[in-house]
Length: 409
Image 1 (cartoon, rainbow, N blue to C red):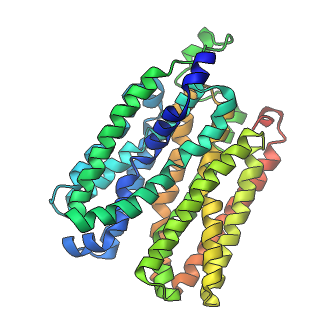
Image 2: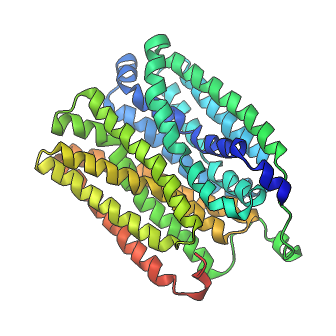
Image 3: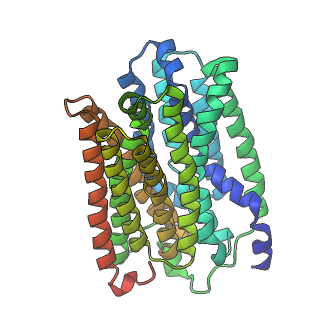
């Protein structure tokens, strides 16, 4: 225990954060250089949006279908897949082969996201002392927002120098370097001693979800929450800069800055909510709080439009970053509390698949509403309604927590 505690330092934490953040880098990089890509390929905004849909759809299917593969595969093998497929996706995007090749790259990026939560959760459970795990969960889940910052700032700068194809070459090289470092760092951190209660019965069902109905129901409850929240998250993320520019007369740079600010706040939020989880706060209660804050954010977006108020817009951005973007860490920390390490791949895959299914659906629905006669007003009403559904589900989970088998959640 002492040796593992000593070695479970910044290097391992940085690798866990990188493993969560490397695959989404292509998606954020493409979004940041969308104007160049649309003009270069001669596509419209709807076709560009299909890139994100392909990414999230493949991630959702991969998380759902490959959970048991994650359980059965070694950590180093899975890390090689994450960084390797992420590098391949950006290498494909770097080839000037047209729109369909870029669509394949986006799908590969989604596939690379199929293993990240499962293997990083298992590494936490098997290699990091108990007192560090939940706090570290908040840090490593912020990898997505770190990726958002790196892609949003780095790709446009590189594109101005070597074009957007060239920017993806640098992204692919970054993935290769981080993958090599990941193998070296994780190999140097030993496994913690197995609990003495581990026996033949536990090992025989290592690749299955817990059989007790209550825990299985909780897993699917978390997945449902992730699905609903995910729809609201990406509906907001994708259209936030456009809303600021079209409805509140922000410049293009200022409009993009709204998404960057949401990402910065999201990093801090995930770390902060992870710290709260490590102190013992229940996951259902925290999910209810986040849903309430996100609902307030949706209302603030709507009021910002109706009152033409930049102040209310920034309030909405802050609430969005602090709440909806922080849900992932609570979901993963809740799994770490109750799911054995041997089953974290399957459980994490189900919950993450729910999130990515929501990510896939949200932008499509928001796009339809924004393009309708209701415009952004209809969109923000729908987003607010989505988060109200999260509040009702959160209330149900808090009530269900009264069940004795959920007492530790």
